Length: 246
Image 1 (spheres, helix red, strand yellow):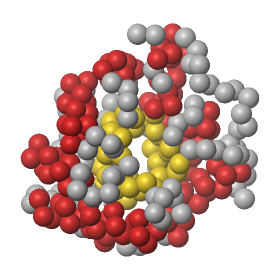
Image 2 (tube, one colour; image 1 turned 90 degrees about the vertical axis):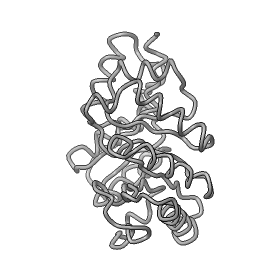
Image 3 (cartoon, helix red, strand yellow; image 1 turned 180 degrees about the vertical axis):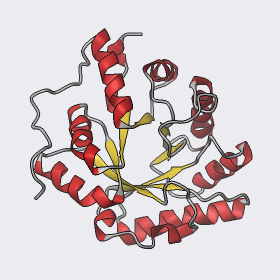
Image 4 (cartoon, helix red, strand yellow; image 1 turned 180 degrees about the horizontal axis):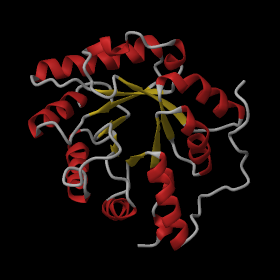
């Protein structure tokens, strides 16, 4: 496969520390990624830096990571004002089992965000497919198709998962399941963003698929792509997202 067909714009970075924020924003801006996930404590600074340099990407806040222990709208209790200003929310769902409980959580969260924060917010759900049963996953997806379309469904919140649980085969299976149940939603794969896996998934299907990655994984992918052929969507002349915080 031609390396130029591995579209780096389909990546979305997870930024969990202030040390990675500036570089993460620069990479997102430079490679035209659609969004970046930023720790709640860094949302305000991320928005300032993006707006100062005319970035077009969305800033997404992770909600109830890493365990998903709160239920329903309780996940949003304690969320600061800056986080409420994010363009969307990537919500780690609770470890529920009954269809009614799963639907109630998803429906309550979607309604609260769209009605009380912004009707333009992206509502994203994290399934945790590597640790949940297929029955739980099926029930989550069934619930998602009963609400106003969730923008995106992410497989796991971790960007590094045991290979046996996050590989080409498990990813393709997850994509097929989501697309057959909630076809309008974007599918986001998380766990092992290696060149080999992304290449295989991109050959299988690229429509409506994104990949979660951390800074180290993105650096590796960029190096590998550049070693094969310079990406066509790089814009080296764009301003750098650096400098002191306002």
